[in-house]
Image 1: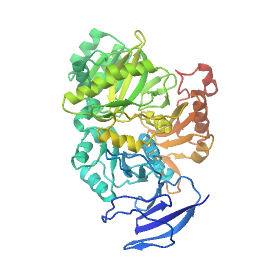
Image 2: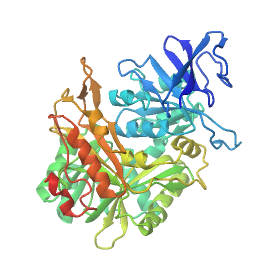
Image 3: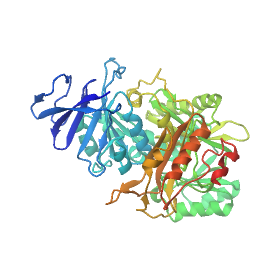
Image 4: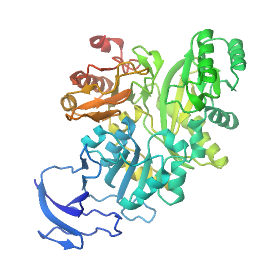
Length: 530
């Protein structure tokens, strides 16, 4: 059945399209509101505003941005009645700005664009894949390190919610500046983001509030660190105190390897100021898992469980990476364990941060070790944002209105909120540039992405590091480049769909792990990729 749309030409750079089920409602740069536009006539005009009727058969209009230009785009707003977001119960429409440009941000844009309460999604800086997918309008020229520029953009385009993806802008205080001027921002203040920005701070919170974690000591002197390592023995873990793009952790199986890790951080300074202090902690044996909770400063609600694969090679071998794949749910996190994590780790942290005078608002991402000996969870580290690639499998399974839920967190209204998830499982396989996590070539051509997305239902490719060359081909610009994600009735079906899609992609310059999900599936399931 055809649907009628109206195209509103407000300026040479912007067209809003509204269908006959409602209207676009946003505070625009020239300070007028578009509201209550009835499409029963074929012509209508107000100063600087005109429209013509369009017929479209698509059931789900969405933002469709030109990959080559961030200043010429079409915003499609699908209207449907939703519950009120505010405490006054009034229906609220949102324009959302996502900060970041990786696979996590693509997944967030994908979920937000599907949110009934979301009118439009911007992403800064975004990437070519996000723009081409139609999941958001990318704004590459917006300097996300400049709070005043972000604030100006939000005011100009009536942004009612900012979702900060990466950790660096949070640690530098972007959320502080936005909240100060009254812009709802999902992400912690710089003070609260220290849970990720400083491993020593995180450990001190654990000590003070009785949160189970590995035994540790902090050092800024290499000789003292080595002496402690000698006393403790190997295996042992060395962590850079600050942000190191997911690469600041060395699991040393021998003393010499641990000494080299200390020297590389404290003497050679491979991580710069992030490695001016190191955390030396006991090696925990068991199974790692990722646990996420949305936090509004006082209350926390858990997300579905997920498990990622940090090592670069099959069988969890080789150096650590930002993540080579993930799946959800994670069988290792039983309902009993999830309740224990909330009671012994998440809620004490939320209450502790409040008591310290730096309430946490955002996502608490707990990297856990389920100890082999005790079967109990211990906190390895905190991240203060959605994990990547775990965000991809969570967002493809989320059925709740993400924009509505994140705004509730910003307003301290999470109490009583529950989330709906699709049944079954999801898996993401990360495709990375050859050489990652070391040096790698940029600009290698990637083909057949559309064919890959069409191999099976519920396949979605999230772009982490892509651009378009002069011929319109996708090229790799980063280490981790694509997150090939699929849903299935169970983990095996999700896995089969994800790998079927991966095998369609023509990218000689890329590689991927062939055993994502190996801890949760029998080894026989991986025979075809051996």
